[in-house]
Amino acid sequence: MKLKKIELINFRNYEKLELEFSKNIICFTGLNGQGKTNVVEAITVLGLLNSFRTQNYSDMIKFDKDYFLLKGIFFNTNKRSIEVQISYDKEVKKILFQNKKVLRFSEIWGKIPIVYLIPDESVITNGPPSSRREFTDKLLSMIDAEYFAALNSYNKVIKQKNKVLLTAKYYGGCDTEMIGIYNFKIAELGSKIFLKRKAFLENFLVYFKEILSFISDDLYTGDINYETVMDQKKYFESLTQKLSKYFQTEIKRGTSLLGTHKDDLEFEINGKLLRKFGSKGQHKIFLVALKLAEIEYIKSVTEEYPIFILDDLYSEIDERKSLKVAKILDKDIQTFITTSNSRIIEQLDINITQLFRIENGSCAAV
Ligand SMILES: Nc1ncnc2c1ncn2[C@@H]1O[C@H](COP(=O)(O)OP(=O)(O)OP(=O)(O)O)[C@@H](O)[C@H]1O
Ligand SMILES: [Mg+2]
Image (tube, rainbow, N blue to C red; front, top):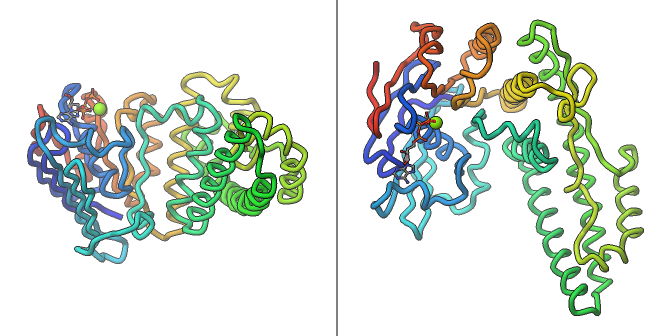
């Protein structure tokens, strides 16, 4: 997937910006606070419909304006053009896909794959289990509509069950029949989610292991283990059994205590837990390998390379590793890089790079 043209109106600190992209590497440079991340945020919103910085579309409207508009023209591998337009006026969010109004998020979700690596994402390797689940859930949802649907239904059931449990805790008189129905759905949907996550992990690990050892010059071996209190060989039975065992405890506590939403991924580097023993640099390289593996995995499933966005982080890995990352990205992957580091710019191959300088909400080709 390639982004050919983008237009921003009243988006963050841009009043109006139109850019055309003709090369594979697009680098935005400029001093801090000028609007580099804002541009790549706009690209992400066009592809994924949400931002990596905020849940609120209103945050993205330029201060003192009352709407924003984003337009993008993408081309997929088959050279078919895809037009997306998003506008928001503090009340109505309007999304046009190929000039047709999109009514449901799921209609276009996953059609424009984007992988991004932003500084905040260090939580994937050193944050709580929810960050690692989110990594898998987001990726799988983007490429597997069934997973997306199962996950949404599962989360809805958990929410409904928690409501009933909370009411029972404070007002007594629990609807145990209803909890039984919820528990069955949790086991059914939970085991479906588990099986899909396991199948994904098996394929994903092949790419991940190879990439990590490549960029670290065989210094690091990596592994990812699925962690759950359930018996992985009989997940459905095990979850059903545990849900019935904790039936009364959950009512007493007023919340659901177990299920697939508590499972975790454990990251290992050279056989040791990254979370406990990893150095700062090891965390970073692990994260970069996760993202590059994500790109290869998406390509293997959808036959389409996603667009890759590297906000700042590129400057934080050492030169030798950066060159190795560049080698992987060489495979016709459109990559947007933001940096305020001039040394990074010197390293870029000018034959395949488009360079833009950003200054206070205006952007000019260099
Ligand atoms: N809704 C908005 N309307 C207008 N300006 C905004 C809005 N949201 C953020 N900004 C401004 O955008 C600027 C930040 O832009 P951005 O995060 O893209 O900077 P950057 O170039 O990536 O900087 P850094 O190098 O520090 O990461 C800030 O000056 C901020 O005040
Ligand atoms: Mg920035």
